[in-house]
Image (tube, rainbow, N blue to C red):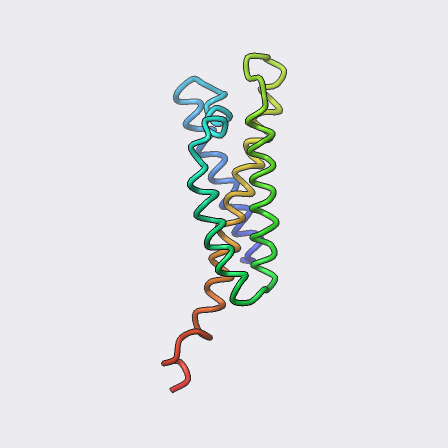
Length: 129
């Protein structure tokens, strides 16, 4: 199974989990309010730090992809934060933007882990002996 397929399945599983939680709670705007709460700011800081250290060592395709996903996550977080969820018409857009936010968040984490995994063998001095 390709990495892209694994990523797509991970995103689909996460969105289904959030949808299931929303259905159980009977609150379809749960995910939108979760993004609007602003409690994900420590995640931005942590991912930014790791991304900075990763790109400082060397820049590769996975680091660039993680950077693009992180920028997308920040922009989508701003878009979701500005939605008026009391308007019934914005609920569909809110859910769509929230699903894209989660996709970008998971993409950032997955690409960062791939970039870090590539660096482990080259940074390990015991691997040459």
